[in-house]
Length: 330
Image (cartoon, rainbow, N blue to C red; front, side):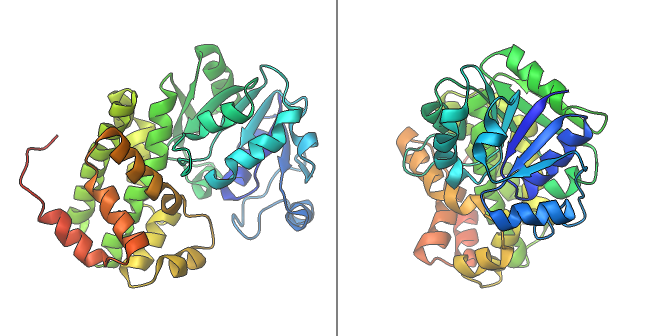
């Protein structure tokens, strides 16, 4: 049994807490909101973001970051990507040298164009930082449905340690040493999922979505490879696996936001209706900036940015993608 601090009490943090506590670990769940901590203490569930997933009585709830971090065998960081740097900075005084911190946030920091594990290492250089990612909606993990995911770290020993803490008969963890590839796949799939949702909102069919998914993974892998990642990573769980589930699932907040925009709602209206963080909106600008930095052609990412930030209609964007210059498939 391990002592584990879960930092972030949204839907994914709640599901991870349920999983780890169910595996027999001693889990402390941290929220920055006192009223949210009171909700968990009263109901043992996130009645707003993940209703029906009831946490075991053994889980401890706190707003005290030190209590959730200091002395823990593992710290699981499950906050939105936009809050990773500030949260890591607040965690730093309580992290011991070599303490394992595993990141579950999916995104690219817009200002620095850094992946999340690089951001954490910059703020907490003494930590042993890892990443866990893959096709894993909180709504299904919290119901005990079979799920597979990938863990990446700087050394295999850390990967194996995290894998053994998380893995059970319905939650399978694979090991990869390509942290960069895992992070790039996790962040950019959300941008492609916005496009897939827009396509659904416009009333287009499975053919269109299949095209977006297939050409989307081509864009992601081109960029990842240019940045130094292993191309094979993008054809695994944290690449095409996560992309497929995020583009197709009713649980996907990025797909839902895109769907609403395809139906004519503005980005702001769509995000308000989704009522949770839509990571693809925050990753879109960073993805385009990385494409320009590394000289990589990413037409879907470019069109998503045009829709989000420059008022282009989703229907016009899809037509422009279809009418692009003839080329070979890559």
